[in-house]
Structure formats: structure tokens, C-alpha cells
Image (cartoon, rainbow, N blue to C red; front, side, top):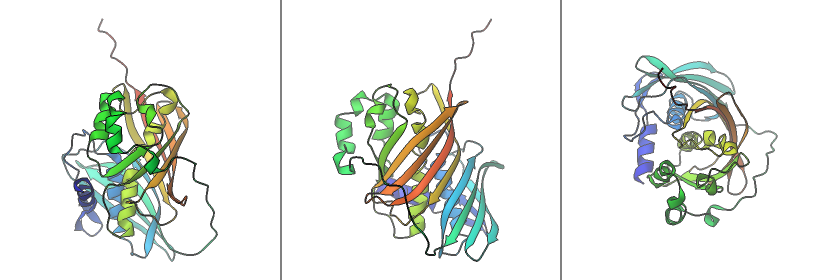
Length: 291
């Protein structure tokens, strides 16, 4: 409950003026602000300038600078357009007088229409996978220290990876990753809260998928990871405090950048969101010896 309450508080932005909001970061050990936090806060800022009957259906963001967790982030919303069916907003996140993130978001008044979707992959259910307690008793001892520390930390989002063994060995594998996700405590019934929580969670494992083909992870000190851009589409209603399958793959990596994409399903197989991201996966190289 504590971790979820903290996340809800972080997403509850302070309004400074019309179109101007302020958000804070949690007091943790991260040297940079988590990208999912900035996406979630920017979505909250945009949503608060839009009529409640219009819901976000897509967002496209660019990470410009690493965020400083010690100081607040100011979100400036530009009301680009209010049309008959669609509303467009642009949000810029600012720290130390500089833009650290920019995002465009589109909102749509719900209407009927044609519908189809891709099927959900056949994977074990969350109940068939090891929970937090079982993980600590079995896999944790085999994991590298940074990975173990990440999974042992209290988090607002519970993760149950299907291919958990990838974190225990450097074997090169098919670049696909399936993980069940949900908030670790019940959330309010407001759909905007569930959308901002999912926006937050969508950045948690996606970049790491681009390293599977190379037997690496973002937890390695030899890898310098950073999200570069992030796009998210909401297709259908969902609850972020119920299990969602995040099916991810990475079609390409080159030039120190990895490209990943993901489909998010409810446990009954309904496709509720799609995600794409390109991020930096630069290999750190030792400085050459002095002459």
C-alpha cells in the first residue's frame, strides 16, 4: 500500500497556474528521474486541461535530458487544438530552466466503430508463475546483485516475468519478453488514474527487451541505458490494479540504440494498449591508458 500511495501522490500534480503544473519525485536512490514517472506526470498535466468525457488515445514523448530527482519538475501545457471529436495537447517538462521532456497527446470523444485486435500470446497465467516470496527463495540467490536489489525493493508495480531465467544467465535468447504487471494495491475508480499508472509502468521493462538477443541487461554497469522516445496508444478500457500481460519484442538494435515494442492485454485476452520505444543501450568503454 505504501508504494502505491506514494505513486498516487507523485501523480497528483500541484496546479500553479492555468496550464502550469508542478510534480515531485520520490525520495529513492536513483540518480535520474525514472522515465515512466515523467510520462505519467505529463499525461496527468495534459488530462487536467481536457474535458473529462474525452480520454487520451495516444501520446508521443521525447526524453531530452536526464531529470534531477532532488528538485520539482514543472509541466507547461499548450492547448494546441480543441476539435469536435479530438483534442490535442503539447506538454513540456522543465527543470533548471531547461526542457527535459516533451510530449504530444491526443484525446478522443468515445464513439462506436469497426473493431479487431491481435490475439494474446499463449503464456502461463500469473498464478502459474513464481510470486515475490517464491522468487526470493529460488531465483534471487542466482541473480546478479543489481537485479536482485531491484526485485527486492518495494515497488508500486508488481512484476511476474515469464522468462525470468534470462536474469540468471548471460545466454543470448530470442528478443521477446512477457511479464504480467499490476499495481500492488487497489486504485481509485477514475480511468485517468489507471491510464497514468499504465503510462508509468510501460517504461519499466521495454528498453531491457532490446538487450535479450545479446545476453545483456540494463542492470549491468557496462551498459549505459536511457530512454530516448516513447509512444503509447490506449485502445480499450482496463484497470491497472488487475493483471495485465505486457508482451514485448525487439525487432532491431544498432548504432547503440535499441528499438522495442509491446502489446498490453487483460487476462481475458483483450488488447488494451500498444507501446513502442527507442532507447540508448551504449556499451561503456574503459578510458584509454594515458601515454
